[in-house]
Image (cartoon, rainbow over all chains, first blue to last red; front, side, top):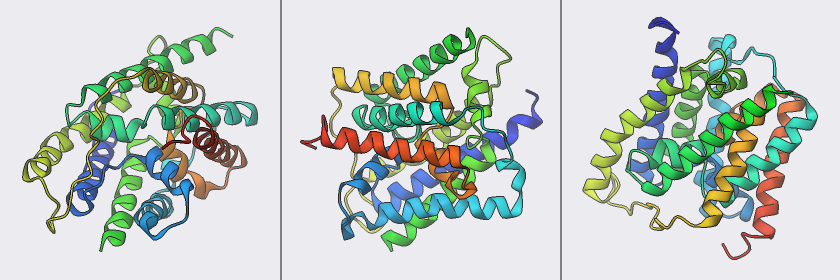
Length: 138
Length: 138
């Protein structure tokens, strides 16, 4: 990966960080996507309005970006229905039990120098790397 | 106001996920495949996001309140227990299999790809299973 191709990931990362900081500064909330979704499933209440709106924003943002530049979303899925079911269950259950995902523990927890988030982030990244390695053997 | 901020934060977050390549599971899998042709994109995404928040988050946390003087809802539990580790291991397995975590899962919904929708449905299912089993008391 050369300097030029590292620019979009860096720019995207900065936007993700900014989005989380805006949320904390104005709403006093941590932007943890798995928690946001999980809490929204708990019950339909006015107190969850900001959660629904963030999720709507996630969908609206990609619709807008896809309109401007569809290449970001033009890819072949590397898995089928079977793996989608298994991986989805693991991601859904695991992020709730682990109290967060890449956004909550990674994007928001690491800058707060949370030891807990550091351990969780290293754990899910390490396990994902090992999982990938094992899958490549078959 | 809180709703509008959440919507805006969601849109910016989603633009970041798109531009950075995080919405494309092949990019994530390329990063996790450290023993193959490694794609370091995610280092820049995470690096950019954490860098921004290292500055902004800590400035906000220092002033102890939101823009309008509201409360900052920061995680108070810093305990590292077994469930947290098991949760992140399960999440890591799912992330390794599919290369999709909760944020990109939602951001990709608009493509209406049946396999992606299966992943999202299954992820919501996993969250609900947690809610009705181990998460009953939360």
